Length: 151
Image (cartoon, rainbow, N blue to C red; front, side, top):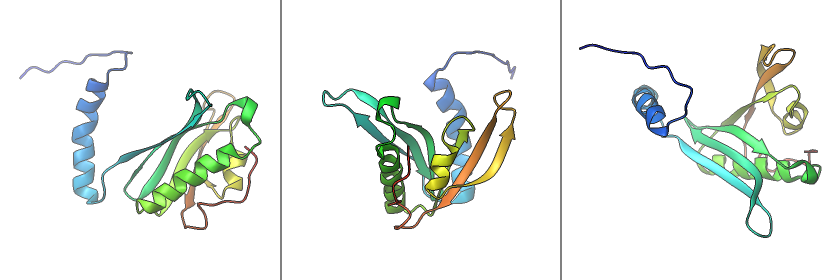
């Protein structure tokens, strides 16, 4: 069998699935735990247009928050806190015990810290001149309903 390498800068879901599916199957066989499920909460205006929200997933009894966006015009109203609380509550309902996420130093590290997330890792100079922080939090029913944090 002759193998070849193809280098690309395009995003093709079929290619990603061909790479990820066998890796995920191997991981699931070794970990013996629940499969990954998407967790998506959209923030919409009165016309139904999506303005922001939360994009994440649950698996191995952890919540992973990949994206959280509250439009600048709506920040400071507790919407980010509500999105995180909803995601954490759903994660707890799905059997998760903890959550993790990452954020850049120019984004929302303080916001997440106010919600109880602690930094467990830092990638310095990513992007150059800044850092990327990795944060985690133990989930409890009480933790899914945090006091108001500025977002």
